Length: 172
View (cartoon, one colour):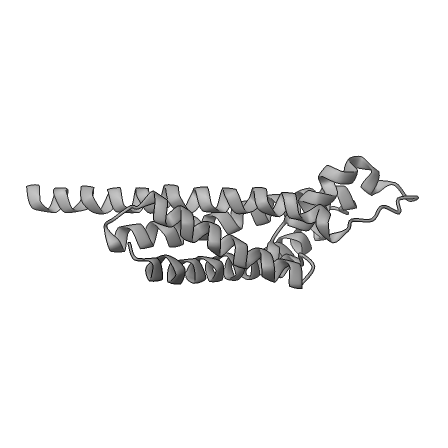
């Protein structure tokens, strides 16, 4: 794979990551509103719900996009996908820093950070904790590594599926 292709793919992967966060944000808002109709949600539970929805939703969208890409190209190149994914995650990090890790840009990073940093203290009426921008970065990087891993895995699964479909068509 050429260097230009790796760079172009990194821009595409960054766009996938950003757009999937936006799409999942709307699903998360709807889910929280529906849950709130039946049960009053405390802040810790809200953070857990958001973290789960964003983690599953964004990874699902990225898996679908990577599977489609692998199936369409019929090649699974883990190293170029890794490099493009990491560069895309770096671009995603820059946008997340610009928007202070808002959910529409960085998914559940805020919620995950709050859960890990404060835990059950989030529900305390006297709670006055503060999260600074640098607190989000390690959790963003963990999420980004998961995103890239999911993309590599499903790109390979897509290419393998293409080969198995091709073999099935030729053998019948």
